[in-house]
Amino acid sequence: MRRHLSIILLLWITVGCKNEVDVIHTPDIESVHLSLGNPTNAKADSTSADNYLMLKDEYALSYNRNKRHTNCVAWELSKEWIGGSDRQDNFRPDPALSTGWYRVVTSDYTNSGFDRGHLCPSADRTKTDEAYAATFLMTNIIQQAPQLNRESWAQLEEFSRNLAQKGFRLFIIAGTYGPQARGAPE
Image 1 (cartoon, rainbow, N blue to C red):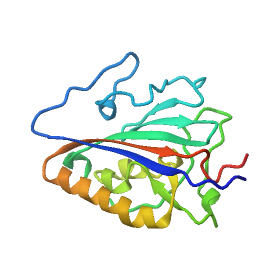
Image 2: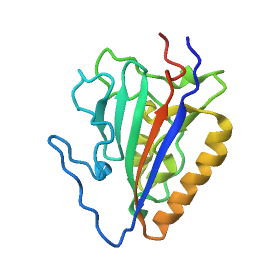
Image 3: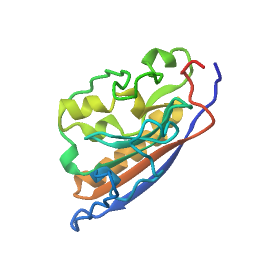
C-alpha cells in the first residue's frame, strides 16, 4: 500500500446573502452546490471513473475511482444549514458508488498517522440529523495531517460558519492534491 499525503487544495469563495445568486444550470446538472459551476466538469456517468459526479442534497462531489478518493466537494453554506444536531461519528462507505468500485472504510485510516478529514465539514450540516450524517460518508473524507485538520482547517471552517451565521451565503469548493489517497488497498 502506498503512503502518500494528499494535500488539501481549497478554494474559498464568499457571496453576500442579501443578493440571491442564480444557480448555474448545465445539461443534466441542477444543484445549488454547483452555483459557481462544475469545477472539474464531472459527469454523472460511471464510465467517467476519474471524474464521476455525485450529487447529494448536502453537497456535490467529483469522485476518482482510480485514486479511490474524491477530487473535490462543492457546497453552499448559509445559516439555513446550521442547527443543533449532535455529532454522530458514523463514518461509513458511500453506498452510492457504482457497483464494483472500492468503498473506502474507516479502518483504512487505522494506524496511518492521518485524520479522517471532512471536505464538507460536518458542522456545516447540523440542521438535521440526516444532513449531518451525510458528511460522514467516506466519499466526503480525505486523509489530513492532524495539525492541519485540527488547527488551520478547523479555524477556516469556523470563520466560514461565523460568516454564514451573520447572514452571508458562501459557496465553497474544497479539493485534494496528491498522487494517491492513503488507505485503499491496491
